Image (cartoon, rainbow, N blue to C red; front, side):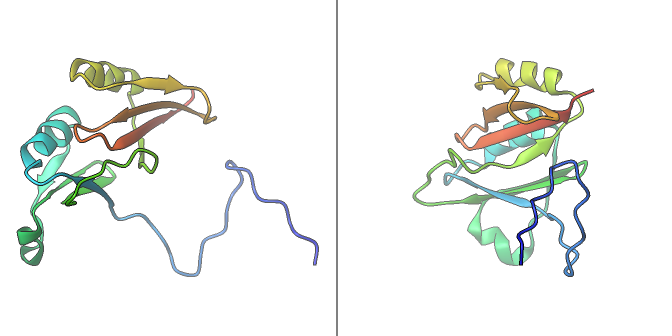
Length: 137
């Protein structure tokens, strides 16, 4: 059997037999980081904190939702920020987000290595990498 070439990112890809979709992303945070998470994910990004299921409250952490995004922050002890793995988050206004991240004191690295998107790499207050993308117009 001759191997078929991989599709390009822009090519249609068939559905899986499982109907897969991303429900949430889980990121780690240090013990006691809930207020910093609320300031960043709730305050800066504008996500709404959502109630965790009762059986998970004792594990600490905090969950957020907004638009088509849900992020769960869970306590990891000992904590190590994710410095390579990261969520890719779509945004309508990459430029405004860049300004807000800088005002918050976080690094902002813009790059052109992910066509057909403009891309910004930053981090949350715990050092977890975050990737924000917006389609090129």
